[in-house]
Image 1 (cartoon, rainbow, N blue to C red):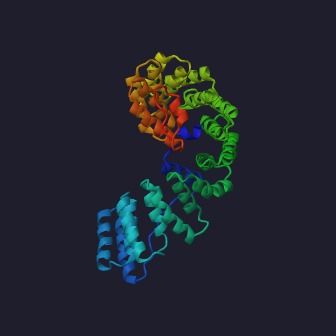
Image 2 (tube, rainbow, N blue to C red):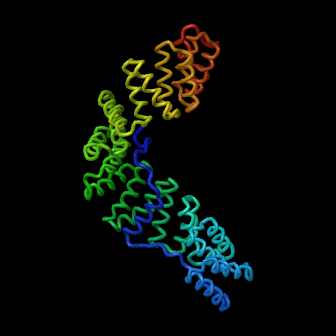
Image 3 (cartoon, rainbow, N blue to C red):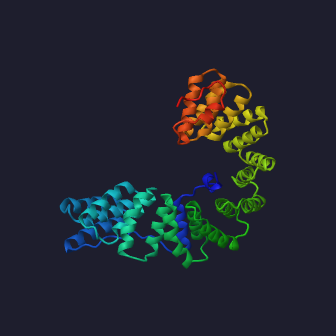
Length: 397
């Protein structure tokens, strides 16, 4: 496991990030009205638009719906109604009308962009992507659409695509910290560590005391197995802002990974001082106690972790191991079964549970767990594993 898996950076709203980026670039999204082909359409549309400008939104909506009732296959009328609905933040209804307009005229200017924006504002990032791709194909190089598409990839957690889409825009705006941060995060979370390091170093040049950047830079270094350098970045972050969420946990995890258990435990306790309900910190403190054969302390910390968050596999597995060492085998079996339920693909809990079942005299269940262990290891049988548990006969050939 690496810090990458822990995703220390708090997930920030792509919608808010988008508009911060747009403001920083001096750009804005303007919802555009469609073109009307016939004079009668223009007159009716102008009437609807005038009503909206007078603040008579309900009357404007009624006017658009009258146009649609008269000419239901007029794509511009559906698009005009969609624009009005979107301005009222009635995005689901707007999306329906945009789709109706596109079904009648797939090339109606501006509709794909408006559709993508309406989906994006609802947090429907994956749904926004096809519309924005279509808009960008019609208008290559449009910076607004490019940024919106990149942020949609980011919101949909398609980080590799986000980095590829936004990196050229960031390169053209080297002083834009917001955009550079999004690119750096996208590189980090798509495991493009060199890219992430380059982008984070750019940010640090402008803001050398940014604790978040030190932390994410540490994540990128950890992703390259440069653990000592990752520790240095987290140490800098902790020194700059000791109350920053996750900074002590991240540093503790890196110490734990480096087998520096006393230092790790100290950092986990500092994290708990900032956040007393940080379940993972209790879990790792318990794991360290278990490694030191302090089973009573281990069970106390591990139970604290599980009471807060029962889905931490490490806590369940370690608790089962600690109970087994204390000969509390029924409790050990229960904890190990919970660990298996959280991730059946890991052989260690099956193996440990087999030993517990053997201690309880439940030999058939012990053999079943050994068989599952062997299956996970990709073998037909595993006589070596079986022979390591006294009283369980090796399978016949």
